[in-house]
View (cartoon, chains in turn blue, red):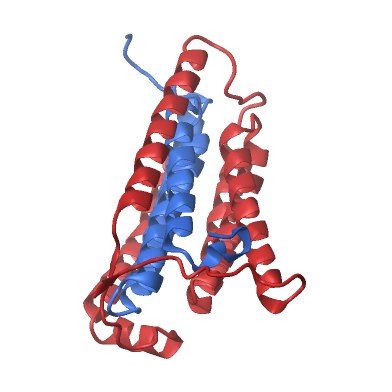
Length: 108
Length: 183
């Protein structure tokens, strides 16, 4: 396996997808603001899409189905981002903060 | 049906076409990784959004390498053009003066915990990807843009219509949520 031939291997794409997923999970756990968590969840979605595309290119009998799935994931991600951003704006208007520690009405 | 192996017999000659393709692929991967690192590690949210856009651009390049320029174009249009901009709007509309990871109690613990969980997921998924004996089936069709369009409007037409309803509902819901409570 040579470095400049990596783009012909399925395993390369799977590793990049796993790396993106790991970054996304790290961000989801360690971020303290809602927007930071939203950004990390987008990374997780991108990792899932990349795995679909890699399997579509190398393994799938019908090389259309993975592309269609990725397009659907994109549509869902766009809807999710719009809803999440409007929730963030509403939360900021009520609490004057987007820190997850501050968004609590009850003690604990 | 046969097992897949990397068809990498020889290293391409210096400055040949394959050499440049391999180099561009490595640069694209570097773009993805750098963007993801900026998006998750950077302390300022604006830089996170910029890193996210860089990462999505790299992902679009990788889709191009996966022989689907249509999905790469859609990735640029939807993710880089729309989702990143929406999140940038959120940063502008709803960010207090200081918003960083560091600070109050539990931040260090969350960082260590998140890093270990992310590293474990990465290691597990990578090991599964590298160790599995992937099988290739008989392929039919080329997967070009025309076939994608045919598939979207025949086999998956129901899902296609449902997605448009979901998007409409998302727009209306976003309007309602963001308007409520405004004086």
